[in-house]
Length: 133
Length: 185
Image (cartoon, rainbow over all chains, first blue to last red; front, side, top):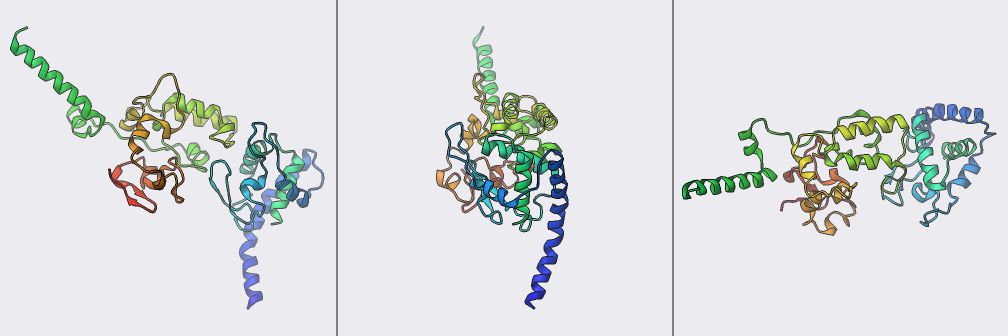
């Protein structure tokens, strides 16, 4: 019975993961064409909680400041209080299913958090980390 | 001028000022009398605007702010009330056009006209919640009911209490405050 449940859960999760998977695979390929090397989810995980000092003197920020360090959990924007749904595609099947949306939010959030754009390598590492959670 | 014509003048002046005062609030009958009633506020109906802006917050109807305010908002998306909300240039252009064409002062509707009341030409307010009309309509609401209400947290969430806000209706009788219920002053 228990194995059945696990099998059913896996079945239920598979389409979502593969949906995100196709889009993410295409993104990773694009990043490699832009010069990135092999992607490393562990590097992405480390970078996720790394704090960056802010030029305007506000508190240092990390991805995890708003998304929390466990991306299977919902987050909350530290400045606006806006609720943020879980980033993990395993929990939230809508995540990482739209390439334009992925790039839009990398664009916004890398600048807001790190004060600069993310490199192709960093983006690939982040996506690999998110897919592993 | 004899006494009779002076009286007529005074009475008509008094009537004219009553008419203006009435137009500020319940202008329905006055509008009927004058001709086609003005609409209250148009719904937000631009697909890009609804998708991009409405993905993160209530899609405020363009008629709630004057063009100068929308222009400022759209020119500073990298610092959008503390968040980065940058968009590709083509999207910015299209959404900006929609907002400017339908801004208060550029459309003929009752609420947009009220939103302009008491606005100062020198300062451009970019928060709807900081316009004189908004403040006047919400000044009796205690902090605990909206701002410190854990179910709401901010006056910027129109649709948290105005149940038909997305339909561009802000009638007081449709208010339902989470944790408090109906609100009438």
